[in-house]
Length: 319
Ligand code: KPL
Image (cartoon, rainbow, N blue to C red; front, side, top):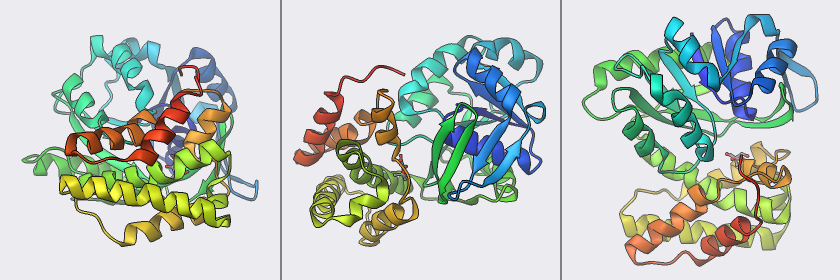
């Protein structure tokens, strides 16, 4: 069984496809109401053309609000967890799970957040658990409480836990890997996940704030030379920050960013989706983190800083 925490667009995508391929899934939602709707309607994944790609009926899933974690987890402890909430929701998750954590050496947690900084926080909260950083470029767009459009196929990379954990790593993430492969995900294990996280940070730092400010889909960023110019500026500033920290980067990353725009052309980035829903965005953990890295290295990232402040200044509500 895989426990998926977070029933946002990516949580529903992974829960729906894993469950349809035969993996037992327990899905943890933020609210009781959300759990009830998913239990009643099941999960539906539409493809880009609006056709049903996957439908899992509610009785095939276990769905519960996080508030029930202590009670349900003591009956059937979670061993494999995919943490799929946004960075901004992590504190709330830790608070709800903490008292009865039961996160021991037998618990593996795959963390699929955008940005950086969260892995340290999770390891600090659950020092016994084995934490696997991961990144994905899957693009999914929320349709309703229990349905999403799989707007762009991407790649999911799962890293190792800390050094010296090799034996356990192979066991843990290999098992999740096999179930994800069986569900049709393009997924691999990465020995360089930290680098993957920096690459993904840059992808998000370039695409997300611009789509949010201009309110355009990912593909529309490529339709105008001024937009591409701004993307390049964010990219160059980001690379300068990485160089100042001695972080390995590759020329191919620019082309990869353009490819993500193409592959998810019809998608609203997660930041635009948050802005449209008037919810707090992840800009602080993406562009804000880059600005702080720049500060620490004595360089500047002025375009990231302006976008960070512009988006924070939208005064979106929490959650
Ligand atoms: O990760 C994404 C996001 O929107 O947060 C991308 C890859 C940009 C897809 O929309």
